Image (tube, rainbow, N blue to C red; front, side, top):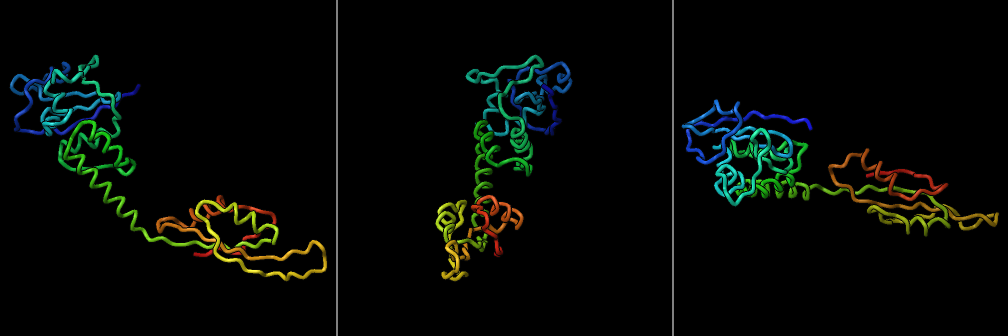
Length: 232
């Protein structure tokens, strides 16, 4: 499996954890007071290189215990000396960056819930609170989106009415029925025609294209049942 390496902020001038394991030969050049300040992590096959100062930012976290070589913490190493952590490296990035600079930065293609899962796994309490606040703020904005209604007018014959109304789905509901054909005819097959008006709620952020695509999939289709018009 292809592996990526990530450079890190080094930090400076702080008391470091004193019992971290010795790293690979290439990292031994970065030694402070006889103990390497660098820690190499193998998270789900992706390598991260960071400092003990960064990992020790939260003394109650899993990463702090890892850096302290906690005997109760079962932590294996790979052939390069990196600590093996079986987690998603994509969501570990925001966690590590938070420990570096104290800010929550999440790329647009990542879900806040994924970062929350990692924050809870590593037991970084301040980050857990921060992500939960971000999720609440996001959900609050979503719930305040104004709701619009889209209406559609369908033309149908009398024998089709019951089936059309009973098979409507995906939020469509009956609004009004308007007769447009005379009940009197000259042939035995003559039937009255109606305009069937239906509506559906549409969130404000949905585009017209999205709404119409959804409408065409969710409305029952009969032949002939021409669409007269659609409006918001």
